[in-house]
Amino acid sequence: MAGGIIVQKYGGSSVADLERLGRVADKILETKREGHRVVVVVSAMGKTTDGLLAQARQVDPEPPRRELDMLVSTGERVSMALLSIAIQKRGAEAISFTGSQAGIITTDRHFDARIVAVRPHRVIEELEKGKVVIVAGYQGVSEAKEVTTLGRGGSDTTAVALAAALDAERCEIYSDVDGVYTADPRVVPDAAHIPVLDYETLQTMAENGAKVLNAQAVEWAKRAGIEIHARHTGQRYEGGQPAEDSRQSVVRALEPNERRAAAVSGEKGLVLLSLQGTSALGVLGDACAAAEVSPRELVVDPRGGVTALFSLLNAPDWARSERVLRERLPEATLRSALAGATAVGDGLTGVAGPLAPARLAALVGDAPVHGAIVGPLRATLLVDEERVDGLVRAMHAAVVAR
Ligand code: ADP
Ligand code: ASP
Ligand code: MG
Image (tube, rainbow, N blue to C red; front, top):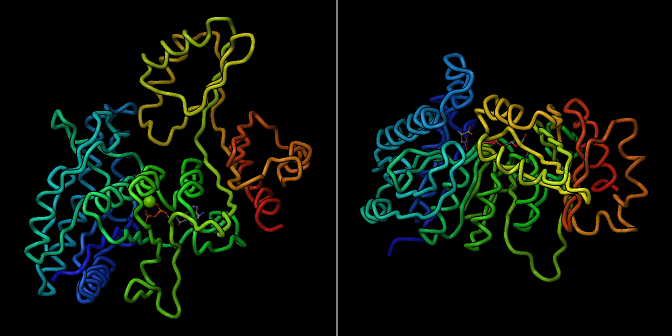
């Protein structure tokens, strides 16, 4: 009988050129030789998506979202076809599918669509024939048959959603890091590797800028109980385990005796809008609808004023949205180029915690703080973009490296 299904996702850096793509083909065939049925999800090669977006902006600084989806979805299509060719050249059978062909059904929100259903009939058919099935990440199709994309980093979501729909043994995410760290190792050199972490922690990190995994992907994994193994493409793994000189992070539900890891992340490209007045919430709501944006966070103060936080990550047409917001809300103040430094973990802001209110002032030093958001599992401080890396390092020292 054929072995269990493994979904492997290879990110942009793993398939950045033909040589690396060839190494990925070899890796996939090794997994197949171990007796597994393999579904592969690929991202666009290297920085292709950024390049395509820059081209669109040269034509029009406020490009229509629908056409952006038509454009950027080509990136993953190139990778899937080249990888399938590489595998077939090695003598094995493979077939590539677009997101639509693989049955990834989404909402109709262009550039930031959510997966609503996965109908992988064709994937299953081809797996049963013994083929390696390669699926273009980051894209789907709406009920109206429009091509959509899933938001930046969305290939992770394709992989986990497929793993759930196929009842896969696990979902392996290959990138240029050997797992999840207590902070982005590019920003915090002494960040520590986390061998096992729970879904909530990683989802909160991802929602606040840790791009090692996409937040939606982690949410799917949590809902479906899919284990994620985050790995380095260049390292060796055998029989589901890291080889001697390699490691990985496993994302799964923790046992009662396992403790949650603490971590810190940073996110640039935030905008804060404040509006005074008793009916500010209603006025803001109408303006957001006209500008086709929704705030990430929203606070209403006792006098009825509102403060809203927006993220530019999946707003390629923010210039247009901002123009509409300013037209509709001439009284509002908008503060751009903000960033959030977020600490994630249990009990951080408690009286005895490392981010207790009494300790926060010392932590931020002379950096002006534009806002703070505190929840049961996280604390975010909003600062100017150029301050965020320093604050992330200070938070890491206070929260993780203590
Ligand atoms: P891919 O293109 O393969 O999807 P990404 O660039 O999206 O890879 O994600 C990997 C990057 O995430 C790493 O290079 C690293 O700089 C960054 N990163 C941010 N936060 C973390 C973290 N906490 N742990 C590990 N990597 C992180
Ligand atoms: N290529 C897309 C991006 O750059 C999706 C992904 O890499 O996951 O965001
Ligand atoms: Mg990514």
